[in-house]
Amino acid sequence: MQLHCLYVGHFAGNLGDSAMFEALESLLPPGWTLTCEAHQIRPWPGGHTRLIPHEDRHACDEALAAADAALIPGTTIVTDLHGGEWPIVPILERCWRAYELGRPIHAVGVGLYPMAAWQRRRIASELIPLVDSFSVRDAASRDVLLAAGAAAERVTLAADLAFLLPSPVRGAAAPVVAVNVVHEDWRQCGDFYDGVAQELDAFAAESGCRLRLMCNEIREGEMFDGAAARALAGRLRGAAELSPPAWRAPREVIAELAGCELAVSMRYHFSIFAALAGTPWIGFARGGKMRALCEEFEAPAAARMGSISGVREGAGSGAHGGAMAGPQAGAMAGPQVGLAPVLEMGKPPGGRLLSALREAWAQRVERRAEQERVTARLRERAGRCGEVLRGALAREGLVRQAPALDGQTEDGMSGEAPVCEGQMREAPASDAQLRESPNYEVQTHDVLAGEPPVRDAQTRAGLAGEARVRRMHRGSRAWDLARGGEFIGGPPFLRCTSEEGITPAEGPYPQFDLPVVRWGLGPQSVLRFASSGGAAVLCIEARRNDDPHQAIELSLNGRLVARHQFGPEAVFHELRLPVRTVAGENELRMEYQSWGSKDDPRELAVLFRRIQITAG
Picture 1 (tube, one colour):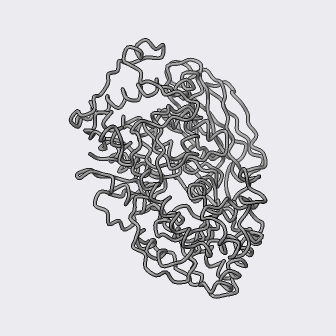
Picture 2 (cartoon, one colour):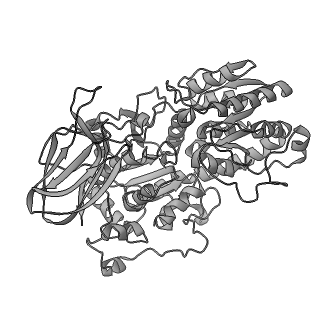
Picture 3 (cartoon, one colour):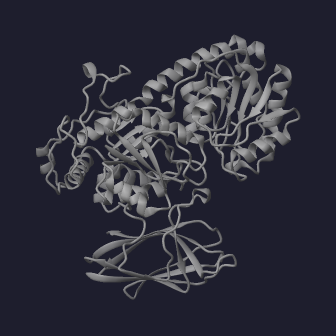
C-alpha cells in the first residue's frame, strides 16, 4: 500500500511536522509506504516516508499517480491567522490534482478554524466534495465540517497525531521555565512583548527559576521563533538561556521539556510537547487551534493573541474568573482553572501571565497529574486517526479491514461515527435508493470490506470514483451546492489550448501567504480554451500590481464582459461574472491599464490566483 501526502507546507521548519510524521508512520502496517510533498528536504530517519521537493511538480504528480490514496496529513487546513489564504488555497489545488488522477483523499488529524465567509464557502463547495474521510483534532473542527454540510459518518473526532508519541520517564526537574514565543503578525506590538518580559522577570525573581527560550519553528527571519526569542531576551532584565533554532527530533525536544518545571507556549505543538513531557504549561490562545487545545486541558490561556472580543462564559469575578493572585491563593484552587480574561493583542498581559505562573508553580504536582490524565485521553483519541484511515481504505476496496473486538475501537468507544446532539443518524443509502435519486449519474456498487487489495490502476480509480458518488449522495450539502451552480472548485486556472501574456504557474509561497499564482503581463493577456458552449460563470481572483489606479477590462469572444477598478488596497478581489461560451474555441482577453515594476524586469500587471470558467 502506497499513500501520498499532498503539499501543506510540511518540513518548512516547524518541528511539529516531524512529530506528526513520526506518529503517522507508527499507524502504518508493515509494507505500507508514504511519499510526501515537502517544502524542504530535511533529515528524516523514518523508514516509511520519502520526501519529494514540492516545487518538482512532475515528481509530485508521478508519486501521486503511483499511490493508492492521497492524504492531507496532520495540518491546519483552514486558519484564522495570517489572512487565512494559507494553506487552504494550495491544499485545494493539490486535492483537485488528486481528483483528476482518480485518487481518493483522506484528511488525517486535521484542524479547521475559518474566520471568513469565503473560507466556509470553499469548505462546503470544494473541500467536502473532494475529501472522502476526515479525522479531526478537536470538536471545533468537527463542528465546522458538520455546519458546512459534511455527513456525520465521514467526520470523526480524534486528536492531533503528535499525541501518539511516547512520553519520557520524568526524573527530577530543574527549576527552569521553558518559554516559546512567536512574532508572526504581532512583531510590531512592542508593549505586548515588554509586558511578557516584565512578568517573566518578576516570576523568575520570586521563584528562583531560570528562563530558557526555546524555538519550535527554526526558520530565520523576523516572523519566526529565533528572532522572537532574541528580541525577548533583549527585553528581559535577568539572564535567560537561549536554545538556538535547529532541526531536532521531537523526542529530543520532549526530553528537554521533561527537565523543566513549567512551560509558557505560543505554539500548538510546543504545547503538546510540554504535555507529553509531563510539564505543566501555560498557553497563549494564538488562533483557533491554540484556543481549542487550551480548552482540552482547561489550561489558563494567559492571553488571546488576536482580535477576539469577550470572554468565555462564566469568566469574570468569582471561582471561575482569571488566575488567582499569589501562590497561596493558587494552592487553594483545584487543578482545573478557567481561562484567564481575554487580552486584546498589542496590550500588555496586565498581570495575568504572572498570576497564571504563580498558580501553576503552586499547583505543579496536581497540575502534572491532571495533565497526564488529559494527555492519555487525547492519545486514545489520536489513535482513531489510524482506525478511520484503515476503515476508509477498506470501504474503497484497497485493503482488508480487521474487525474491531465486540464492535469497539481500542479506546472503548463505539466504532460508529459520532452524532451531534439534536442530529439524526443517517442510514447509508442503498444502491436502489441511489439509482432513484434525481442526481444519480453513474452506476455504483458497494465494495465489501475484506476484499483483497486492488492493484489494477483502472479498477482502483473506478472504485474511488464510485465511492465518491455514494458519499456525495449521503447528506453532503456540498453536492447540492455543486448541482445548484455554486460550485467554484476545480483547478485554479483554465486548461488553455494556447495563451499569451501570462507567466507560468509559480509558488505556492507560504511565507507571503500566497497559493500557486500567475502574473498577467501588460498590455494584455489572451487565453484560448475549448468549451461545449452555454451559460457559464467567469471566476477571477486577482490583485493589482504597484499601481493604485490599476484596472482590468475583460472580454470574451470579442464582447466586453466587465471593467474592474482595483482601488488603493493591494488585496485580492473576487469577480463572479455571468458569461456565455460558444461551442469550440473561445478567447478570453484581459487588458490592463498599467504594467511594469521597479523591482522586476517583467511587465507585471495583475497577479491571479484563479482564472476559471464554471457551469452557469
